Image (tube, rainbow, N blue to C red; front, side, top):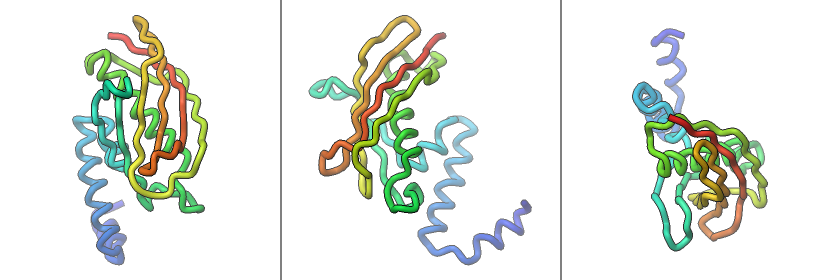
Length: 158
């Protein structure tokens, strides 16, 4: 695709769509130095750190129209991506950014549709070994309703 062809595609977008495209282009550029920037930007992903009261790492994402399926609920793959990203962020906060970490297993149960607003993921460590980390995540909506729960296993090494 040429820049001219791209320019033609952009001509009939409304202001919200133009803003979304701008945000995604900026995130795409940031992936040159931060590989997860694009995915995190799509979700409006936020890491809020460790909450000792919950004994959990807290992350948030925003449900937007672009992330909804044909039934106008958050696409299950996006919910899963949010959980996986929250768990990965938890691993890096626990073991440091210099370690290589990947998902070995992720099991998600969808309990209620997410329709709009912010979702919050609380991730707890179940077991942290030398290279294997097991976690559980609960995702709630702004009304504190449980949207999904997951268990995940990550591999992490230097």
